[in-house]
Image (cartoon, rainbow over all chains, first blue to last red; front, side, top):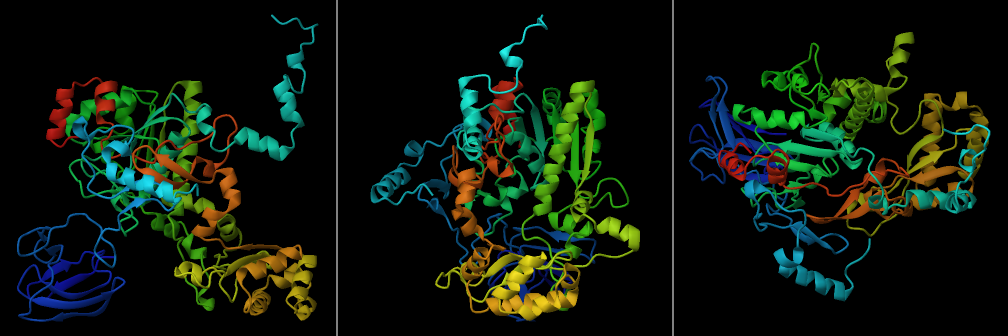
Length: 155
Length: 470
């Protein structure tokens, strides 16, 4: 679901990034004019707003906007002063932080953190195995300690 | 030339060697464990080895048609858009349970676990195949392959001169699969999602409780029609491969997802055809059998767990006691012999008013019991009862572990992952399905395919990469 704020003054449709706004309260600036709107979303539903808050400082810009009555003029993500960049990075629904792990539920290493070392191959190609001892020695070390403590299971 | 007058031991029925004799003498259970042997699948041959398949697919539905081939041993090449890859990599779940890396150019992005099972064992190349410069490489792949599965809007590949009409000119043995929402017809331009398949085919309209009981038409939480339709495509592919063995000719498979989902509806369509009756939802109960449904018990099996899915939801149980003696026994257990007096035949029990009264009585009886208590009481009495299991219980279920249904895989690139292994799709004694790797980064096999297989020089590959063509 992607909610919108349709600014009737400048006839601009501001699209809100659905993932970011699932649980969010704050002020967002219209991409087409200087209007600021207050919204309060709970689980993707517009609980309060949008209420106009002229002159107040916005927390964030919309991710994308267009003007459907004006020949579909588009304001793409990352337009300075109008929209914010969209980095295609889904976030943790509450914290806005990645929930990155180094070990699976049974305590063995998994490549669930970033950034990873770049591949050595041409055109993004990479080998068939992840040599954890060589490429991620600190995780390997942590893994050895987990084995010693008996925190690594079969299931 | 065999001498017909001589009886040879190998022509006689029965075991031919000491090993086979031992197998014949084994108890059946032990025999099954020996021939299927989960965990030993990599010591056995692959049935589709030698088949090469291209996958220009996205999300779950069409990729799964190729995943089935790949698990059976076909060499499958997944072709993705440069830098980005299959959008399913970025789709779910939403809380960053991601595996890294995705691609050198995107160090902060990974592949989500939603991608699992849809593309295992495949080689991953990137190619922007609608660009004229890449046409030659694409056509050369087609010449060296047995088939392709694609999922673009109908006619898109035709516009790009790579539909079946064009590719069969290059390779008459080529098997071409289009999979998508509607296919040709009045809704040709509609795209597809699993929910669309469930809704448009009428499946969602008979799923869930009736509005009279506070229910609504319901889609399945997971994309079951995507998985199901993908498997249906694989069936068509295997038939097409067999047809090609006989005729030497390829074929085109056009597969509409909304069409496939109508098949799950069983008697719904003929029922309408004969009587004009529109089938209704009946939720967790059954229109033909009673008792044969899911009931809510009063207490959770995990009252102290923080996870609400365990703390509150682990309260449902399947109860089946539809024939007369079983129903009589059930009524005695719950202390409602009056129900037995009232509903002595199945015909009486399946009527809506009877079902409402019977299930209400069952849930009242279960109101002060946990799900385990309910299941134990009924099972001890010889009735069929089973808890409605959640993921945790499926993971811990010894039956699934022994049969290899849920397995830990040490993925060579991404490490330790829990998957529904190839064994979740049925066991094969001689040529079992297997998962070698869950997936690979975008373009991970560019050099292997473009250079080692097609013979393009490394300088060309680097040039394409610079231009974002691969």
